[in-house]
Image (cartoon, rainbow, N blue to C red):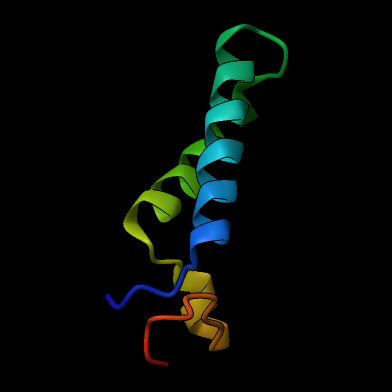
Length: 64
């Protein structure tokens, strides 16, 4: 798996994932907040399988 997420994309995914999970834990949103695990994991791994499927790459230092 080659990295295909740039720094800004990674930070946004990690923050979004953590916010969704936190909101779910405190009861503001329902169980679907646990879907925040997906952007959190992809942000931490620097890889998004959907980006690869569509040929996208936001990582400027990574080769395409």
